[in-house]
Image (cartoon, rainbow, N blue to C red):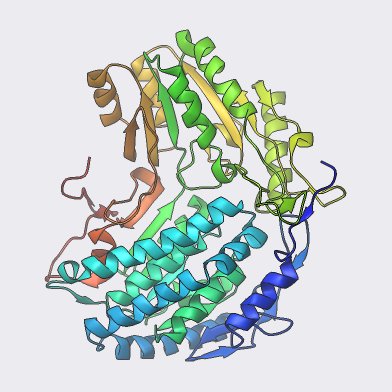
Length: 516
């Protein structure tokens, strides 16, 4: 699209300058610092990084080695022993001050999310707002949640994916601190460094006991997962890495929260409200389906497939994607987009290859959007962008058949019986969310009860949720304690002797009271 340019004041250099002004202790002129042992440190080797938005060179994570990580964890344990003795009113005041600081720097945090992980402006601001409002909810509710409970024996170690640095990772760290724990975080290596560093710097200024280090999982895992000082490991990511974390924890008997991917499915059976479904399908493309609760698989009754397509194709064709900061005039608002780039060029290339291989293996291409439809600046690097695609019946040999694509690719599976519907929806041995679209309430509830997902919507999508909403997963999609609402606090505190916290563990699965 001709005439577009980056909106003045939102350039990467302008953003980094704002971060340096807000927290000069955390941001050097040419590098971002790690924070441990009560100080910001120019240690580690910065890894080159480029924005998925347009290939601009941005700040890369300063990777430390195993020895530094061990020292950081030991120092965090010292902070933990001091912090757990701080009275709750003072902890609450400091956490509230941190949330207030996030609010003051909301747009800077959001702009960092745009440049580092490609979130459109609306979704980036939403991520910051959800972090703030979620922390504020816990501030109001924490007294009852902590009754009869105590902090853990050591700090909480957080290893999270790059897609939600604020509303998942930074939010969880504040709740962990509110509950009386120090918190350690590993910066996601694929993105979110500057946003997370600014959020941590603002919180540390208010006295919160946070440690932040960058490094590879293999080098840091001995300290962050198996380190004897750690009281709990909280992980968000893929099944392969999560499985390795679980294996490392197997003989330790340590509290853990391992949120892993699952193939979230949307089943369509004896259904007729196609107008409503079309609007819901459009929204599933938010952030290019780079979410743990995205819906990349539709399981459709064969006799309804023509009507399903009549609802699906206009929805997918209306999706808008492109450069999140491109405007035609300096005074224009930032564009309203469903998604920007994928997390990186390698991901876009790999996913495009998976689509091509699936088609070569027998999948039927139902929709393949054009890269030319992207709203881009003339001449910009567009290697990380991918148009939506939809495939009918991907072959079983394809990763698209059994795994979450984490990109704007949908797959359709046709079924003729309820048994086939349920088998197809449960193909990944557990999921975080699912939805059943069915006109008859009794049939919908019966089918939903047989779907192996922690949350199953009926004629509406489900999400991770905020505040009092619980969250977890069945099967291989989740290991350890469930979170959300009071369960997040229970997961990072000690209760009565012999307590079994709700969760999905090797020796038991305990469903939260009242969960449906």
